[in-house]
Amino acid sequence: MVSPLSRWWRHLTTGSLARRRAFPNLVLNAIEQTIRDCESRHRGEIRFAVDAALSPSELWSGMTPRQCAIEAFSRLRVWDTARNNGVLIYVLLADRDVEIVADRDVGDARVPAAEWDACCRLMERHFARGHFRDGAIAGIQAVADVLARHPPGDAEPDAGDELPNAPALL
Image (cartoon, rainbow, N blue to C red; front, side, top):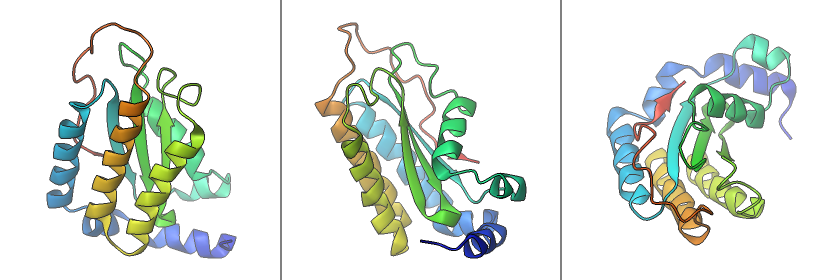
């Protein structure tokens, strides 16, 4: 368990420089290409977002990484796909926490939460060792595997690439 003071310190000292070190343009390009490649294997839409840290007001209010991920899911309009098949991989760098939020046609009713959780823990293990590129790529591929095993429910054709493949830097 992390002490509240330690968490505050990490968030106050983690900023865009730390994000650029962990996710330089080379890594962002690799993430984008991996998403593009993986989306050809299933009918889901993957979006990857990196948030360096929470603001003091978000920390003060006790905002959790999960709540931040749900907010990012809405702000990035991952829910706004024709087939309700969007999946957000959200990274909160200061906490080294990964959350996955899936829209209703690929969400918990169809995919056991333990499968999404396993994808998150895989990335977190890589990130804890400082392997951000490898962790992001492994996580995206794991999410693609989940989406291939649990395809969206309707038989309509894929609506195409509806969400940007480039990572969102929040």
